[in-house]
Image (cartoon, rainbow, N blue to C red; front, side):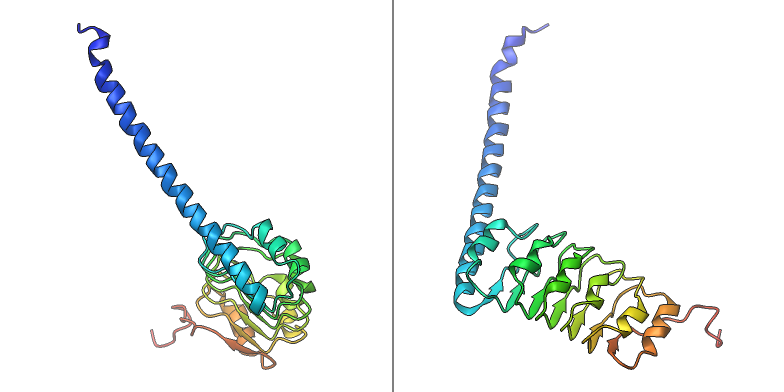
Length: 211
């Protein structure tokens, strides 16, 4: 049997290589994170001038507390958080950005919205498309000035049609590319008070009398 120490140099070399690779990977991650932070700060500074906060494609998993701090003296009119990996919107969002008229949350991983969004008294346009909702968020029926709602490309199987019918200001809703059951689909089609976009429903075999 060979003495253990004969392989020591090879082991050390391998460990050094692995450690070097880890250090490089860490450095790349830090660099990417640094760029993302710089991007967020830069866009917050732009929003201080034009009152439109665009944080799309910033690799966000949530809205950083620093954003609320940077925006504390700015009356935002719109907020774009699209194309991130956000999973939830905190209740304090509505308090901090209470005057926004447009909110874009599309292309994230959100499945619920906080009830506090009903406090957005000026919000007229809300985009929650391309997320992971399985039901139309209850708060969307209660936002007082909401006129346009984009909820397409989710996995929505439940819509409270009665509450939708009584939404205070809603004029248009896009529900295309969802998995809405036939019964709810038919109720939505019969709703005349709101313009509703729906993907044409495929008939079940038992419904297709031509088969």
